[in-house]
Length: 200
Figure 1 (cartoon, helix red, strand yellow):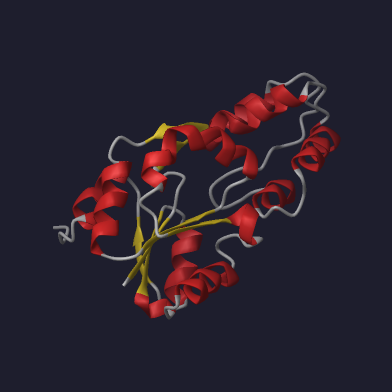
Figure 2 (figure 1 turned 90 degrees about the vertical axis):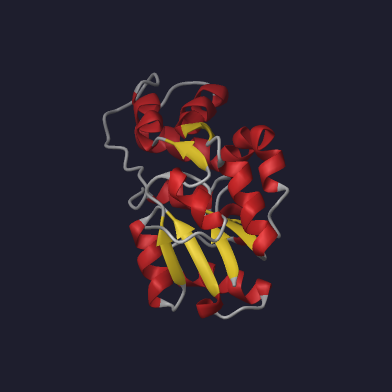
C-alpha cells in the first residue's frame, strides 16, 4: 500500500489568515477581497502553486489585482506569512510510515513557500520515497490528474494508495477515485496511524 501525505496542516503548521492579514497590511492595498484558503483560492494563487507563472509574474499580478506598492521582499514575506513551522511529530511520523512501505509527499505548494520552509524540513523530507510538488508537476489537488500522476509514477492503482490530507475537497476526490482516505484534522492522529495502530 502506497502512503500519500499532504504537507500543509498535516506535517507543517500553516495559517491562511496570516497571509490574508499580511497582504491587506501592505502599502497600496485597494480593498479588493483576497480569496486564499484551503479549498477556495483566487486564480493567481492556483497559478503560482501549479508553476503556471513565474515568481516575478506572480508578484506583478499581486500588484495589478490588489494595488500593492511595496518591494519584492515585502510581497514575499506577506505571501510566506502562512508558514508557521513543522509539527514536532512530523519527522517521526514520516519515518514510521517509511518503515512500513513506500511513502510520498503530494503538496499544493509554490516555489516561494517551499524555499522558505525547506531548511527546517530537510531531515523529515529525506524519509520520503518521492516528493510531488504542484509547482513542479504542473498539477494541483483536487484535480484527479494530480492523484493519477502520483499513482502512475509509483506504479500503483488508486485503490492501492492511502491519502492523508486535511482538505475535504481533496479527500472527497481521492475517495471517488477509489483511494483509501484519512482526513487529518489534527496532526496528532498521524502518530498511531503511522505505527499501524487502529484508532479507537
